[in-house]
Length: 267
Image 1 (cartoon, rainbow, N blue to C red):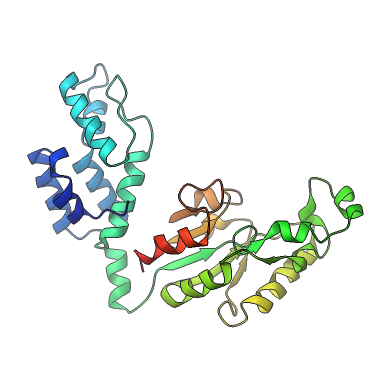
Image 2 (spheres, rainbow, N blue to C red):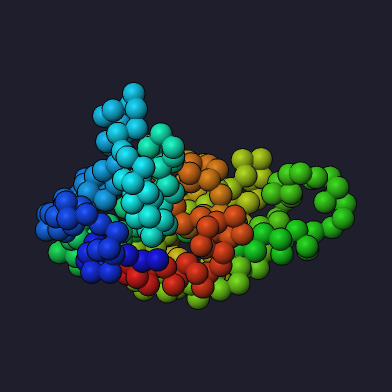
């Protein structure tokens, strides 16, 4: 569901009060930075969460009001307020972040457009660009036993890996539409992994990723807009932009087709 503020005002009026509509239009008119616009949108759409915090001793909403609020939240895919009138998770904030991204009217993006620049995307290697299992399948049974539970420390294993299905085409598409880099972690106890990852990039993405490989155990230090990663480890979970959680464990981003479908709306 790729909603913009304009689309909410046009297609979801039945779920909104006149006051919410007025506040949404105000957010739509004002140009602020990303974080401020998310906060303003959350206040406009989900003021019930702040109403609760202002009156923590009791639920300030009647049952009728609670029902209306939860119908609205359900329409937007946001979790309901509980029996106390409290929104217990971050689903409303995550929803508002997506709306602001797709509305494309925040200062950071507008400034990039003025400079004819692009948003920055970081892409992980293992199990995102690279099919990690394909490397495991090629090592000896002896090495599998020797390096049990630490197969990423097998010398040379990263040179054996094939590209993940759709990864090469997907990465090249990202390069054409975003400022794209590879951001990966190499095992500290496997020195060959550092050079093997470079050689893999030179083999499969010699032009698209030329001098665009970053190896770090602290991905949260990278400053950008999107991180495509299958895990939250090594700082990925603390990345300040949008973490596109790739693979079977990632909601809505099971494969490269899903990733590109999402990113096309933001290019």
